[in-house]
Length: 207
Image (cartoon, rainbow, N blue to C red; front, side, top):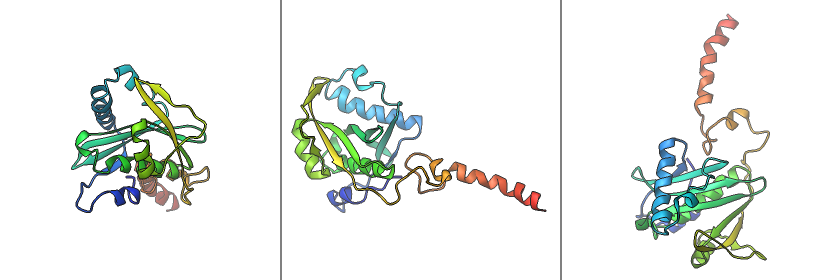
């Protein structure tokens, strides 16, 4: 699970909702992500289906899902490129949009990107919320870039430079860590446990 300490923790009152944010690994979690986006974009913004479900959900993408009392309440899509990653499709259920959850999803996105060794994130933000993203998450409009429009909405291209992490994944990271599920590199996974099957074999060979 991805830690959402730091920025998100500062924005959420101590008596506020306690959500969990993690990578969507299973098919049912991806279905929940799509459902959240259908509410936010297809229903509220009248985005056509084939523009919202755009062919990028399984090609080099990672989805984060937020849960409150085990119910899906928000999500974000991350797409990975050679020297940067892109934060997309942030969706939060209407009743949680003033709770700090959107900022928590962004915070978790930047944390995951930094863990993967990325230092540069891009996003497309509606003009009306650029200031909110700036205050909450430290993003800035990209200088010299024109605004763009798609799916009947205008967007501003923003970016964030992320400090490097000492524990970022790299080419010489322990191969067993690289085998672990996305976002779960700090915890032994199923392939770590599979090594337990080799213990009786090794013991027999040494006898």
